[in-house]
Image (cartoon, rainbow, N blue to C red; front, side, top):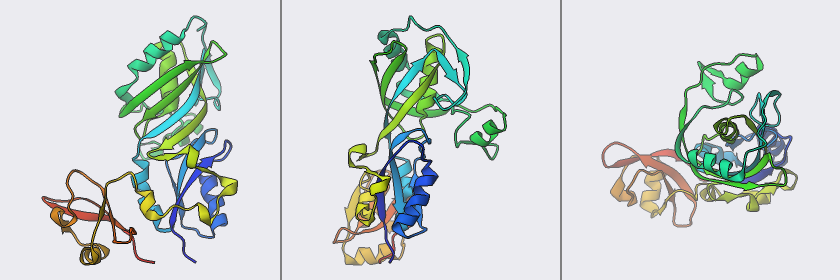
Length: 290
């Protein structure tokens, strides 16, 4: 039996994102499984897993904004910018206050430039940074534009540990934000207890621990792209969409930049269309009928 859908997994610590995919291939009985938005092994929370044709939609999920909680530990810098790495430096930061940290967080809110950490999947010169880091090589990394829309900070019972709650664009590294906070306050810091609480509208409250995932956990392909504008079409247009035809915007009744989820009269996802030349739109993904 062929299955298609999206699983919103609540990943536990100790699992790599690849581990989750491998496990669900066995649970769901299909090799066509992939994930969107890698989580570090120590991190927990929302991991979106596509099954069947939904694997072709994962790039649209990767682009969605994300939310995280975690803790920033001041006074200690690490090789990975989080608690999994080796300590590389220590600092006396006993005088750091909640007001200080909030002020530094405000300076890291909005549209900023961020240097990706060495231990990351970013490629430089065709090589993954984490592979270079394992080989003991550090290279220059270009700063990349990201957007931090919310950066809340609260005190904890430990004067050197502050709880953070961040909403940000895809591609933002929370580990780098933690390290940048430490540097901004004249020392160093690292991240611990990272938890992704949302990817777009997919929240951890609706996520399923991996040991409870079954065929009943799958959301329909149309739900997988629910964060994008949807347009319903009649049978004639549905036939053109199914054949992957380039269409005039007026045929779909869309404007703006897209992409758009195209649904048939019954609400089944037919395709995802994107802007094309002039007044036309073209299919980015066509979902064959089952």
